Length: 303
Image (tube, rainbow, N blue to C red; front, side):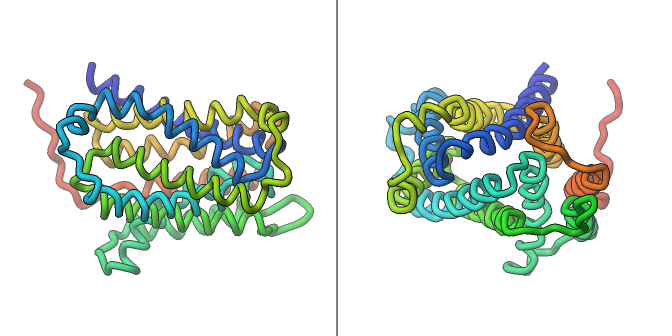
């Protein structure tokens, strides 16, 4: 039952994260990208408080979580998270495509081990390089517009740069959070991201902000804040407890598929046939990059 519960939680997480791209696109039809990010991370940070208290409250009240130890990670990871999410949000606003945004963003899954190799000279296995090549090839197909040809505009560039920062975020979290409580660490980085997003929104978009405009995007903000952060992150923690990391990563990569499905369902996407071929190649590259063919078969005999 634990195994099936883990699979269900991982799958639901991928669904929620995938459909979040739809609401991110719809939300910025009403308000600016920084304002949208700031409000959804405010809601996400608040919604995660009861989750933190339930799972890690005892450690907090016992003083086992030292602010001096956890604060540097909050600042570094929260800052990178702010940059990555801002680039993604602006890119989604420009392209207006949830599916395109989902698949370009998902390339971070392949970029992460590649960046480990380039920065830390950490050995990168052949499946990762195959996945990287497939991701680049798929991206090319995805950006081909019928009758226009290859169209890789400013929005796509921002999404791709954002994918680099999502990979950097994964690396920084791995570096800072190894021996720290995961939920408390996540909450702190969300808080830092919220504060930075609020500053950016005030500086760049304060002239366009109004309560009426905020109300127009309220459901998009609620979904991306409460569901994508509060609910999905809780499901992720529960799901990963009894799941193989490689299997979990592959399931999470389904968010790119659900972003495309959501875009079609909500009528904001019209990806061409060659675009879907590109999506399939990218998804295949992500899956292959997560496989480790060198691992020995450890399957136990049936008792």
